[in-house]
Image (cartoon, rainbow, N blue to C red):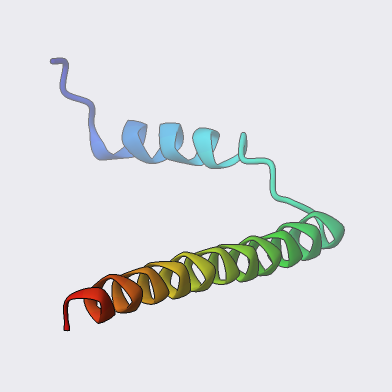
Length: 65
């Protein structure tokens, strides 16, 4: 691997940082809302699955107890 001097490294780093495309305000808001929506849907799904398993196990255990 070829070594580069610190000055050349800084130039390359600055060049790469210049290629970054930052999201605009609308994109940030949209993705933030989508994260909250998906987190809520996931929470509801796991709540439903947990409730179903709980009821199933209670029913099963009531047969033997």
